[in-house]
Image (tube, rainbow, N blue to C red):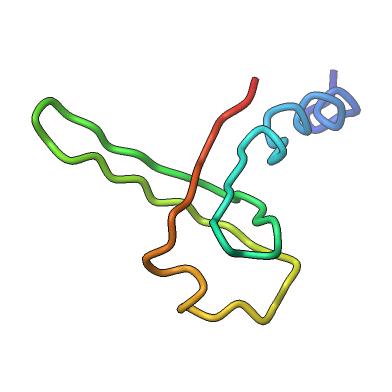
Length: 76
């Protein structure tokens, strides 16, 4: 099959389906779309997660995001 043929058009959307990642930020009226995430965990170490997202609402100020409670989940 030629490289980049129709097969890739049908299989790639499965791997890049952003609906599998959910981010909810308390008191935010829009639903963010997760672009990427990276997490680090270790024994007796604090965990950190970096989540990159976009939103359809272009008027989100930093005060609406910083210090807010949020939930991030992965779905199969």
